[in-house]
Image (cartoon, rainbow, N blue to C red; front, top):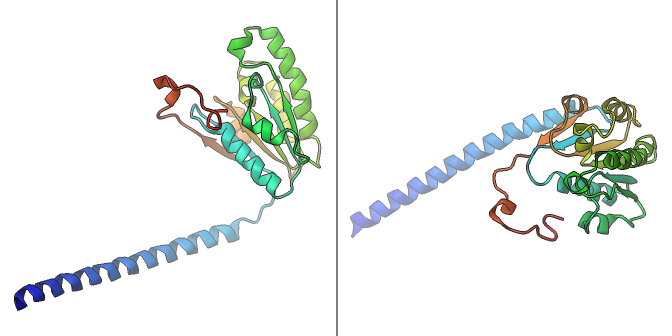
Length: 217
């Protein structure tokens, strides 16, 4: 009986010792991490408007952009949204933000390019919608601008690439811009401050699942 109790106590002591050792290693690792992060924060002294590009073939590019819009509105910043391509069905983001006093919201309202099947009309709509975007990009009172699906306008040649890049580069110094869409051009990526590429591993749609309200639109 004593032998069994002794063995139990030994195992208990080992467990306590291992736990203490693991906790000590964890504390040291977190201390090193804190020192590194604190150092990087101290080195970050530049204050400027950011150009953020969200690209790739994965889901979530527009959702991420509108998450930043919600955050910006929460801070009381004046914002602008221009949605290229979309507009033929109810969009939760538009329903939420279109009438918000801090948000100017414009939609090209042609639907997807494979639905219109008319390049001339698509170009005409893109040029008209770009005028709204250009006005936002030249307004120093607007602190955050979302250009949703803009990359398609450049990929398909609906808008002049140099004109768009020039407007982005010469916007107000403290204005943040978020561009979304697949296949962001090399020039756009080079101009950007932050680029995130979302890749698709699985998507319910390809298994026959309908688009879902609140998740897909």
